[in-house]
Image (cartoon, rainbow, N blue to C red; front, side, top):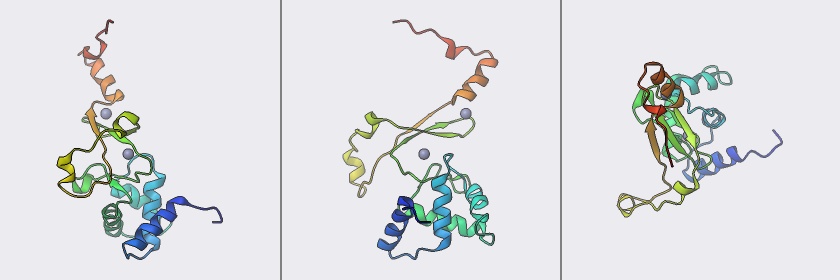
Amino acid sequence: MARRDPLMDRLREVLGTAGCRVTQQRIEVYRAVADSRSHPSVAEVHECVRRRLPTVSLDTVYRTLWKLSELGLISTVNKSGEKARFDADLVRHHHFTCARCGGTFDFESEELDGLKVPDEAWKLGRVWGARLDVRGLCLSCCGDDETTGSGASKREVRG
Ligand SMILES: [Zn+2]
Ligand SMILES: [Zn+2]
C-alpha cells in the first residue's frame, strides 16, 4: 500500500483526535462502508469485513459502526436499530428514500447545499452539515404502480 489513501488519513485523524485506537476492525469496517455505493446494512458490512477478518462477530461490527457514526466518520440512513443502513458520507449528498422498497438513493444538489441551516437547529448544538431526505416511490416501484393501472404518473404536463 504505497499509494496515499485519503480515506485512511481521515480515519486516523478523527480517531486520533478523539483519543481512540486505530484498530484493524475499525479500518476494515470503515473501508467496507466507504467502498459500498449502496448504504450497507450491519449484516452486509459484516459479510464484507469477514472476508478480511474471518473471526469478527456481527456484534463487533455493529458496535464499530455506531462508534464511527458517533465520531461523524459515517452517517446512518435509517436510524431504527436492526434496519439501520450506513453511509461513508465522503461527498456532500442527499437522499431519496423509497417508501415501498426501502431503497435509498444518493443525489447531489448545489441548490440544497446552499440552504441555510435554521436557527432552531443551532439552538440544539453545533451544526456540521445538513442533508435533505426526500421520500417517495422510486422509479421501479412507480413502474409497478403503472401495471396496476393507476395511471397517475402518465399525466401530461402542458406549458
Ligand atoms: Zn422502490
Ligand atoms: Zn448516501
